[in-house]
Image (cartoon, rainbow, N blue to C red):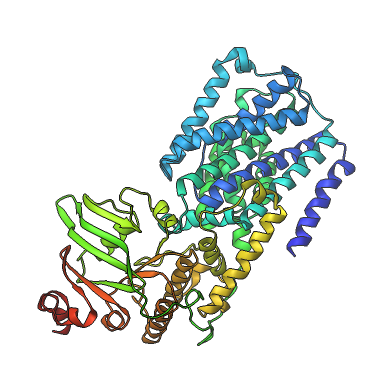
Length: 577
């Protein structure tokens, strides 16, 4: 059905110049195609990374004025002027993104509004370059019928490249950052740099559309690049459907034709856009295309599916001497007047499982956040393989071989189960961005590898039946299993597990016990396990560290810790009482 729809759309676009000579209809068709290009680029920013921009009319203007000046004053052919416009918009976009993406959400929207206003002001005031309020005249134009074919073909290219990007490691990384920034960092991804790349791509698409707009009209002025135009761009995407390839087409067509049908209400156009935006957000949060998309039911994984082997790595000899992989020395963490960790010193050997237990509020999750870089200690030292990690960003620590799960499972909800694992497999090694956009053979080969490997790992952990299901629809037990598989896909030296048995049924706890035992005995990574399930802790751990009030009150073999009077009083005794 999808292919038939795209084919029908292509036939209509190709036939329009052949079936009518009416310049009004041809102009509407070209305008719709331009809006599709902008919305496709904006989809990379909004749909893939979840960042809102209300300043894209500024990049539209940069593309239009760059192309117009290159063609009129520089004498460049139209194709070369368009390339120059794309480059100019991309460069400015990367600079703006580097500054603006220090903030997110509504703050980013405010910054981009300011950018659009600044660009509009420059167009008006820099008369010697831009022509001021009068704009630029005598811009070269193609015959309108021929122009329709060109811009329709370029709109198709824009949709094709965004579809390629969405299916690539880059696209999955963008959606991972959108779904859970902290989880993306734990896999070695830098949200800040990924958002800059998404913003740059989006700006480049918009700049290219701006160049085509200049060649369509033969005349441009600042009046065409206002905040209202930015709202139109965003509305086209939101109405059509974010994170869908067809959404920009639906939004572009509707938002081009609707104003023409409401020409008598032109003075109220901004109000109408605002109302349509509110309706889209409340009644069509996923846009028209998203509302028409049905999710398939999630198959239940077969009991006993797979051999529950963690990594499938070669086994190591039992009894090989353990070496200290991770060391904490006098680590102290304070939050205002509260001391969450107080002078904690601990060594984590490899291989083996080190359990960290203690009452609620003892500082266990704080300890994991220090190890993975989300918290910076007020005092003390942390070394991984002899390398200090204090002050390093979470994604930098992840690239040193540290992976983790979270107290509340952090999955990438807009990705499938298999794609969640593929994000871990790729980590920060995303390949060439241009290769991803163009769908080059090398990129397709990498994707086939990720596809096969992620499914193999899911099969090994009994999740093969859920491979194509949306991750955010999984039950609690399956979510925790998937999070562990995804963390292991990075090939870590150290795995941090934050209460992996929380909310699991007894049968699921038994499966977790078997999986972690196999992982430990099969040469998997060293593990730090934070857990309240005492039977699991005592069965799995090689050593146990006990925190109480942020202080380390005991550490040693599980049997020794169980008999420690301080532990019995602070924790185990309270449980048994």
